Image 1 (cartoon, rainbow, N blue to C red):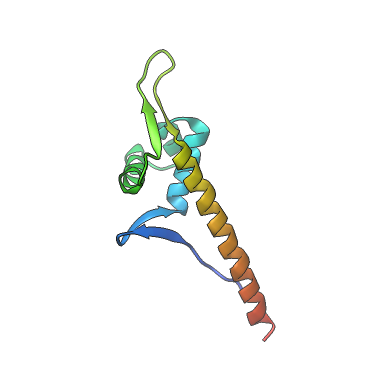
Image 2: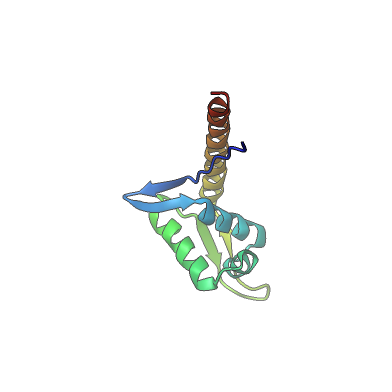
Length: 112
C-alpha cells in the first residue's frame, strides 16, 4: 500500500484568507521580478487576478507588504517591504514544520 498525506495551510483573518500558498507564490514572484505585471506573467495568471490577490493581502496586513514606484526611464515597479519578506519567511517555516509533523504522523499510521 502506498499511503499519501495531503494538506494545505492558510492563515485567516476575520474569516477571510489572509495568506496562503498562492499569495506567497505571488509575493515571491514580485520579489524576484520587481513588478506585479511580470510576476503575474511568470505565474500565468491575469494581471487583474494578481492585483486582487495583492490588494487583499495589503488591505488585511497590519503594515504595507509592497511599495510601488512610479514609471520613468526604467519604468515603475513593485517591491516587497521588509514586512512582506518576513511574511514569506514565516509562512514557509510554518508550512515546513507542518509537513514534518504530518510526515511523522503518516509513518505512525503506516506502522499500525
